[in-house]
Length: 355
Image (cartoon, rainbow, N blue to C red; front, top):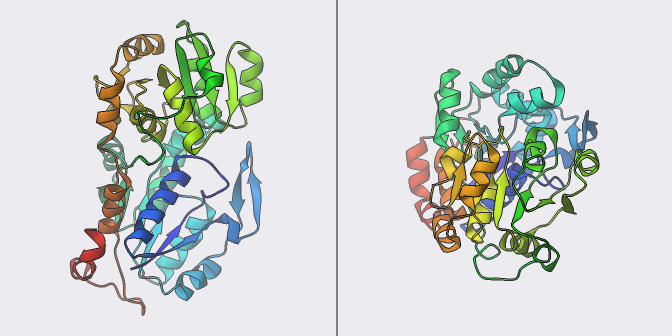
């Protein structure tokens, strides 16, 4: 199948959406699908206010539409709610073409945290954007319930995975982390206000707090919390070494819908401490982590978890399953624009999907 994935989040950004799309694209291509990524890199763009690392593309619907047509696209997925996907949505609506979408993050809460805007205003846009989608892909049942409560009923499960070639219990550790005084409390992710990192750094739990990642709040947080160790971004085997070197991963976000870093840490034998909110409540189990409204309580409980139990639990999250869920949610259409029978089309590709 020729699949066009339209997204406002793509490299060089480093976040859960980008990493998910890269992983799923790789899996789809490995089983014979052709994938086109339409991202801001194809257009003139400007920095996002308050977050210049994110580029806002100046994309016109007819230009995006020509790219989709030239690829011979048979199914369209809109991964985000930004300008590029908005242009693609307009083109699909104008040409009566079906598309799927995804709700990756608690966008209304994210915008409210960064701007102070009323999240109800943002929800109006979110509902308007996703309502025409044939399927809205979500990572957990809790997120599905949130969308259903807003009248968005066509939700489908789309899980996440771990790259077990990189993340596992056995492997190198990071000497710059293991040399620190324990217990080592690790945060991995964007350093931005919506990630609630301040709650982690302000926690009175003893130990050394280590932050891996980059983002606009780094300088201010480093000044406020001089005892914390900021290591900058890590990826691949270096990131796996950082996970293995920590005693617990602390996930303080209240706005994420999943949290890839949690399952990667678990795969490396590192338990997770988090708030009992959307994302952690669907991902974690008492055997491999702890959740509490008081973060230091969650940290203390997580430190008692067995690393091998964590790694065994993480094995259930894999990218081939995620890719199959993604394909099954797509709504293929004939190249002249008419929608085709979903089940018949997928049956004709069963060898690819089941691989």
